Length: 228
Image 1 (cartoon, rainbow, N blue to C red):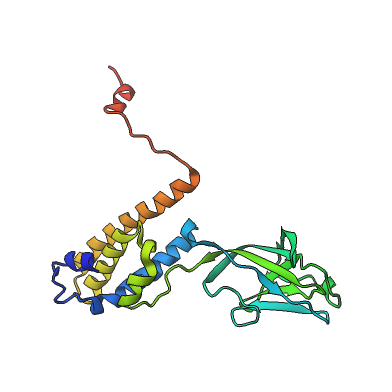
Image 2: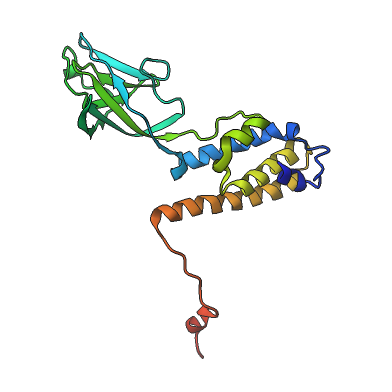
């Protein structure tokens, strides 16, 4: 927010105070979160602790949602893989995701779930006569917005790494548009924010692909020139 104020010639934060900027910084974090999720940036990857699903006594299906017991992780955005094991009986086995649970399982208690589907904002599995453990590989929300000034200092910490310039430019752009009502400056700052975001995403994507970048030699294009 100091950077954002300076970009608007208000380093003293006379107009662009922390309080005035905070809603726009929260908006910027929400947008950055969506960009990270869309591009599967590693910082959003998470594995849950074991979720123990008790045995059932009647056929049917069990839902594990955000408000059930047991419950899904509160920061869950999208499940990548779901694994199961009989409680305390390794190894974990990957489950198969379907649009709907097979109807031929209706009327039966299974030993292991094997199949799952996502319905009504919850994991749905066939009822089992055994106690089973689940483990989720999932995309998580990393910015618990809306945050206040104290939470920004104490909760985000290393999550600011490699995103400072984007946050500064984008917050400044929003403040210029909606506080300063300066569309020209907002457009310029938005352009710089997009460049900063491209660098941030590029660093993470390149790291996953293990691609090394080599500098182009001086006058490298000389050999490609036509000779007449």
